[in-house]
Structures are given as structure tokens and as C-alpha cells.
Image (tube, rainbow, N blue to C red):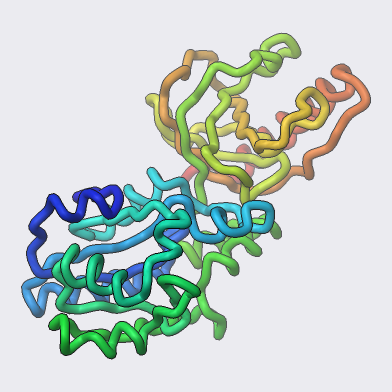
Length: 314
């Protein structure tokens, strides 16, 4: 999949005629997959390439950083997931005041028509773009004859009588309902990242951990979990993970992901790991002392061992 970063790189390209969709695509869940499948079918029928437009940061993160919901995916994870869906091009637009000030007509002309050579455009009737959020499906359709493209609204994908959405998946994660989250996503929920050198406090209290950069302002999970870890030579290795701000030892506000592998003593620094969350053991808690924390960690590890023993990898 080709990655196109920013408006300035569109002018240097000469893309073939394309079928285009646009959105946050956080999670690339089953609703998104339905949209992408439809886009690919139309593209194949009309001999077009497929292009997805998304944003960094996400609009909500730029406009309301304190209120923006936690991401289900980093940009890297999103890129990988869209590539796995067979998309040809990903255009990543930097969401900033310049993009916000762009008129809806300029957005359609410069991005859809001239930039991406769009012949087929599909997005939801609730999506807005351009200055004052004045651009929508109807406005885009009104310029179709002028610029030579067709516009089609995307349909929602329902599961158990309710629309599949990133919001619904976040709610499942808050409830630690990982079966439901996987059903909505179409795959197990994972957090991924590179193992970094941390403060190595875990080693001093007998519980070495792999510290993974979340690359998120907020985490969709908080607490202690039984997990399975893959990457760095591991395949679904049993572990226990803490996701949070480590209130007993850390005054920071950014969430961390720390994983203790139950049957592993090697070095994973620099490796990329995928951490699949299986069940929640407890909420994150601030302890009065390191001794109390050490006791709780030992109990967490024992609980995780018991869970893994009763739920072997199939």
C-alpha cells in the first residue's frame, strides 16, 4: 500500500483513476471492513485503484484534546490494518488550522478531483469536512458532474441489532468484554509497540517487565490483565500486563503498558510486541508502599498463571 503524507505530496503524484473513501478508521473494525469491501468491489468493476483518506492527528484530538476518546489504534497499526484489507493508497492529511480553513469546494477540487483523480466516492452521511464543517455528502454530490465522479453513501453495519462503531468497541473494552470487542473488530483487540528501556524498577522488586510505548495520549484500557504476547520470537506467550500511569511510583499522566512474561527471561529491548488482552484481573490502584505493590504484583502473577493454566492456547 502506498502512503501519501500531506497535501503537498499530492501535487507531485499522477494517480490513476480511483475509488475513494474518507474517515478516521480507528480500529478498522467490521463496519469499516464492510465499507472497504464495497469500495474494492466497485473499484474492481470500474478498473479503479482504491484510496482511503484519514487524518493525523484525528480531528477530535486536535479540536478537543482533553475530551477526545482514546484511540483503538496508532497510525502504524491503522496503516497495517488497511494494507491487510487490500487498499492501494492511503492519504494521510495533517489535521490543523490550515485544513480546517479549507473551503468545502477547495477540498473537493484539490483533494478528491485533482489530487486523487476520484471517479467514485463513498462515505457516510454524517461525515463533514471543510470550513465550518460545511462539506457533506450532498455537497460532494452536487459537484459530481463538474468533476466527473459518482458519490454513494456508505451503509452502517449492525451486529446484534446495534451499529458497529469505535465508540461501541471502546465501551466493550471499558467493560473488559474482550469477546465482544473481538466480535466487533473482527479480530482480537491488541496493543502493539516497541519495547523501550524503562526505569527498570520491576527488576528491583523481582518482576522484570517489557515497557512498551503506547504512542497514545490516552489508553482505551486501564488496569491489570492476563495477556498473550507475540513478537520478538514469542507466539502467544502467557503474561500479565499493567496499563495505566503507575500511580504508586510515577506521577506522570501518560499511560504506560508494562508486560511481565510468566515463562521468559530473555532480552526484548527494541523488539515490537503484540499484546492481546484476555481478561481483566483488577483495576489499577495506588499502594502505600513498594512492599505493598510487590505483594500485589505477586498476587497478579499468580492470578494470571491460574487463568492461563485453565485457558491453554488452542
